[in-house]
Length: 97
Image 1: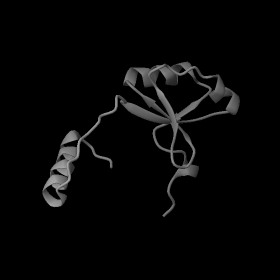
Image 2: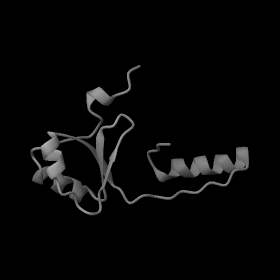
Image 3: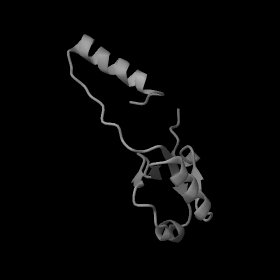
């Protein structure tokens, strides 16, 4: 589930309890931003990501980096010009309607 703010999550939790008698809770993650990354295999393999980031993949196999702060994300973007950092999934990974 995605939401713009914590209030939307609170509404879902309340509705689950009221309508389905289900107890739910949130476990927030420490990430402040995400970027899809593309570049040569050699460039991506050579990056030494900060210890706090989570290197993962989306459901299409594209590499996604989760950053714990906007500063961390900005710093990585500036120090690795050989890699492209995308705010959204590269076009090849977008869902086709």
